[in-house]
Length: 300
Image: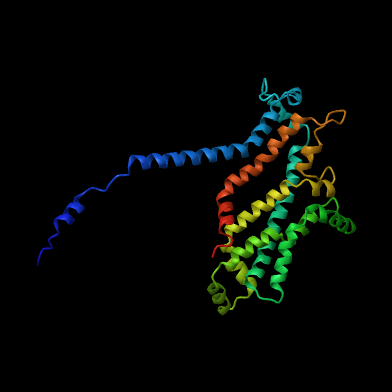
C-alpha cells in the first residue's frame, strides 16, 4: 500500500481549528434578538393590556371606575366583586347554557364543514367553481343582514326560545371553515383516494376512514373557532332566547343592575373576567393544534 502524502498547505489547513465567530457578529446577533424580543413584548402588552385593565376594573369600587381623571389602580382590591358577580345571578346556569349551545354548534358545524370541504376538494361536478365562489362571497355578508330573515323563519317554525336554531346553523356548515377544510383536503395525495376506490370504498367511507382522521389539525382549529364564535355571540341569543335560556354573554351585559335598573360596572367587569377565562384556557390547552391547523391549510 502506498501512503498518500498531503501537501504542506493541506496539512496546515486541516490542522487549523475552526474559526470562531467574530465578536462584532455576535454583538449584531444579540442586538437583533434584543430588538425582536422588544417588539414581541410590546405587541404582547398591547394584546394583554385590555384584559389587564378589565381585571383592574373588576377590583375597583364604582366610584373609582367613574373617577376623572382616570384612577389607574384601586386603593384596595375589591375581591368580593368576583364573589358577588358569581352569586348575584345564576352564573353557573347561564354558563351551562352557553356551553351547551357552543358544543352543539361547534361539533355540528365542524363535521358539516369538513363534509362540504371534502366535496369541493375531491369531487368533480358542473359549476363547482361557481358554487365555491358564491360560498366565499357569502363571507362578505354581515350577520345583521341575515339575522332578521332568519328570526322570521325560526318564528314561523316555532323554534324561538329553543336551541334548534344552533342545530340547524351547525348542520348548514360555515363558509370560512369550509374554505379551511377544502384547502387542506385538496393537498392530500390522490393515491390515497384511488387506492381506497380500488378496495371498494365509496366516497363516504373515504371521507370517514381516510380523510377525516388525517385532518385533526384543521378539526381542532375549526372546533375552537366555532366554539369561540358561539360563546362570544350576543345578538342571536338576545334575539332568540328568553331570560332563563339565554347565554352568559347576554347575562353579563344585562343582569347586573341595581334597584333603579342602572348597570353595576364593577360587577360587569368581574363577571367579564370569569366569562373570558374558559376561552383562554381552551386556547392554551389546544393552541398547538390550532396553530398547526391554521398553518397547514392550503399546503401541498
